[in-house]
Image (cartoon, rainbow, N blue to C red; front, side):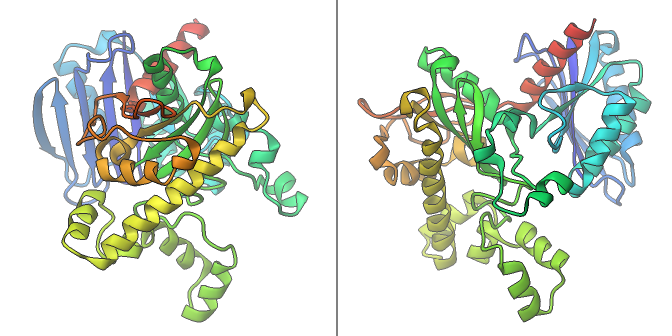
Length: 401
């Protein structure tokens, strides 16, 4: 049984055809970029074979037609049983994956104001996939769903009640598929039931977020109403004073939308360094003495350690008040030895200490324990959101039969 997983962005489609029961079996995957523009291209992987196809000006429908043609070329059409879509924002409506029906699609569209940069692309992808793969069950798997178990003390903002009741102003959280997956994998590595663990999971990539996971359920997270809240990220500011919007709009003559755009696209590591949002390039530049790069790394680590310590507060008075482990994942979490080391060094007060040899080098795709003997466990777990979406899709379709 194969599941086609689709992750549609504003100008890209990332896809994978995989077997949820046999993760190594990925007969087809790829990335289609610059959709709707000149220079559209598809990078395709058929097993170990890689190729590039030019699709200048292609829209989502043309992109999915190409995917369908590739599936047919591999004679796998009959083995594809469902399509799983990553959907960024499900609001408070969706606490689990949902079979896509007209009512579900309408509810996703109603969440567009909460995620104007993401949900429209997800919707366009769903509609195009329905046209191309309409004979297959289609499932929406939401980034926000995992965090719907947060208690009000974690998800409510201290704002007028009417903002919450009338406009849905509350914390939702994101990266839920990744946080849930790596918590499950960490429990296996620790040889302990997930139901008995209090873990902080750190998804660190161009977008970054934390989750406090108790017994397999999210009870707090660092992102909020939008993916802008929380940690310093590649181009996103993370937490800033809420008064910043009004101040800089007046001082710089910017509109509120221009301020928001700058906080999303010109800030974070890029804004601090004045150089790049690529962690690898920043680490290389810092080693050569670039002051902006050094500052960006220092702020990133400080804020990361500070918010990890804050996440541990979520376990106080619950589950025995224990902190059972810290999990690093994502492109930075899996690959940056120095970021992991600098972050854990600041968390010694919580009983964390690394084994330098276990922490050495890039460990993308490899999961394991990197903490020293006697330390609260620190792990690196390779995330696999495509596999998680495929499993969720398969399980939901099986229940619906």
